[in-house]
Length: 362
Ligand SMILES: Cc1cc2nc3c(=O)[nH]c(=O)nc-3n(C[C@H](O)[C@H](O)[C@H](O)COP(=O)(O)O)c2cc1C
Image (tube, rainbow, N blue to C red; front, side, top):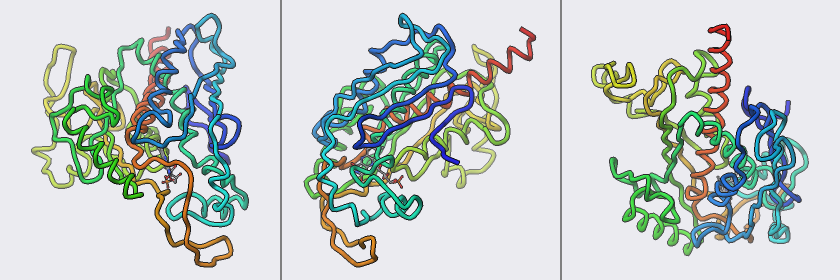
């Protein structure tokens, strides 16, 4: 009944809570002899870690990865890979007043109602701290995808009401600014908006775009395990995500078939399409074009303003939450979106490889 595992051929199970001793992940299904570059895994974790800039939570964690199994002399052995990241800077006393009260729009109420017990310190398992484990696993998936030249790049496209104009995406800019926007002048505006929200003791939402480049034709299954369906589930499993759209997404509802259809054309690498409203997936299966999608994040629930809520006896109370929080999660969520995309694509790549091997009799 529990659901802490994701993926079929390349599966991950995460463990740990925000204010427990550690969070971590067990990967099952990593093929043997993959070069497991620990410094790359650490680099990915550094992109997600708290306290990385003035516009993120000031919780200070070094998020040092420890590989406990499944790797020998720098290579995967084909056995489960367990990775652990210790929690060092939890300040549980900041959450004392949440023991008997519920933050509006957080997971406190539903956890209590469902399990009858909850780790109220820092959100327990509902905390985005758990996503450090996903980023570590996603880095291993990226190492496998890199061998096939499949590349996954995400960036911040929107913060609050400010939106990056289309066609202003320069990948080389993304990691040069603390908000992870692919356009330097827009980055300055995003940072200012987040900083204003922080000073007003409020929070802001935003959108992350993700591009999957060089994905081969054929990944995904035609019915329940469609590539786009699995990407949607992966993205909607990230805390604070409220929406997912692939390709033309909701704009498709306002188009006609004659303008929306992606005409097939002969390309250098084989059959391709002239336009890409499908977002690189047709019938649940990748068609060789770029896969692109958007992920919508809400403004985070925990804000420093007093809010009306109830305690666990149903009495109305005014709640003031202490602790350190992200005024806008999108800058730190970029590596999480990439990691979840990498896990889905890697899972389907391994499944497809088994299928093609069986089909060719090799
Ligand atoms: C990178 C990241 C950081 C987050 N930081 C916070 C935070 O500081 N405060 C908060 O209330 N929620 C934060 N969240 C969101 C909560 O974890 C999430 O809203 C909560 O678990 C309830 O789940 P839901 O919003 O998906 O319904 C963060 C999410 C992400 C992806």
